[in-house]
Amino acid sequence: MIKIFTTETVKTLDKYTITHEPISSVNLVERAANVFAGEFSRRYGKQKRVIVFAGQGNNGADALAISRLLAEDYSFTRIEAYLFNTHTGQLSAECEINKRRLSATGGVAFAEVSARFTPPPLDKHDIVIDGLFGSGLKRPLEGGFAKLAKYINASGAKVVSIDIPSGLFGEDNSVNTPETIVRASLTLSFGFPKLAFLLPENAPYAGSWKVLDIGIHPDIIASTPTPYYLVTEEDAGKRIRPRGKFAHKGMFGHALLIAGSRGKAGAALLAARACLRSGVGLLTVHLPSCAEGFIQTAFPEAMVSPDTHPGHFASLPELTGYSAIGIGPGLGRHPESAAALKALLEQASCPLVVDADALNLLAADKELLNLLPACSILTPHPKEFDRLAGESASSYERLKKAQAFAGEHRLILVLKGAYTATCTPEGNVYFNSSGNPGMATAGSGDVLTGIILAFLAAGYKPEDAAITGVLLHGIAADLAVIYQSEESLLAGDIIEMLGKAFKQVTANEN
Image (tube, rainbow, N blue to C red):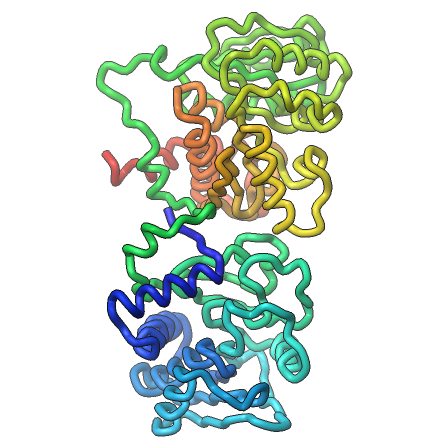
């Protein structure tokens, strides 16, 4: 699991590394530049024209060091480097040292800009290395730097940003000026992901991104707290429990799934299939009586509890004996369904997974939130969460609301998206690293509900059930697009790859 630190905290980690490794600040710059140059050279041909824009601070020091290393160690032959020394007229100590080193290097066309600047012509065949400003930026770019950012963005050149795109703030960009942020094709980030990379409105700026290990001291990483984490495939392997030789179905729980309505029985089927494919011992599906024959024929492994109403959820089954309950896929919003949901919340004594229309019913009567059992799991997409907690002006604001909501109501909130964020009552946020845009398809969320329900019924802690379920869901989708495509991916394809996903994540643990 990768920790995600704020940009202010990263400064503290750098200082600790410099003091306790020990290593000088300029040598830490050199180490970071070496790692960047190596990654860059693996991706791009040495005959490409590379234009490097460097600022006055340590991001600029990185850029100048990278320019030198690409020429000296990696044989790039067409490098132009521009150092902008126009704001205060004073370079950081590390930038000054790297300016002198670059000036003594052959093979790089180097210019220091201190007055009016005419930018070099750029086109789609060029690569720009953006090292103007780093993660310490606190206000939008202005003046000449804003013009340069707009020029780079309009050029069509491929842009590789050092650590973070110039102009982008590391966390909250709600007061930023979008048109003056450099739009990177690729961002090579030092040490850790930036929180901003995980928020959808920043995707046009960060582009694809990769974290490069620059040797920040492991002691300070381990001892420094953070509420933010990026969950990796290895984490799922560690969380999934191996089955013993004498395992039997009673050891993996009995789940109740309340889902479906007239015209939406397919949602119940998808969630049910995903639940059984994720290892639950027994599953009972409670759905309108009109769909009883359909689900028994389509999926005989599930037991069926028919509702008293033929078309929607109107009555509760006997709740005794279930280890977890999931509700919501294809449920509909009939007033009788709202009343039955309230009865469920009043009577349930086991953990719940709440999704889709069940969330919308909660949003319509927020008093029901107070009836949720502690550590219930809610799985809204952004619009569903806005209905629960109020609209947000940015994804960062929505994330902070989700953290607060999970703490206030003592529940697990799975805020779905490209980097689905699982928020816990303690205020921690676990971002998911798996998945692809093909998952933006009907029924994908129903599949996730079924997966999480299986883990919850099998006795996993709610936090682990949510985090592991989200990760496995994405891994199965990543496997599915190998055989399909993002455009053609169906929710059922994700279910069919769950077995391979389990094998993949547990291969190194067993």
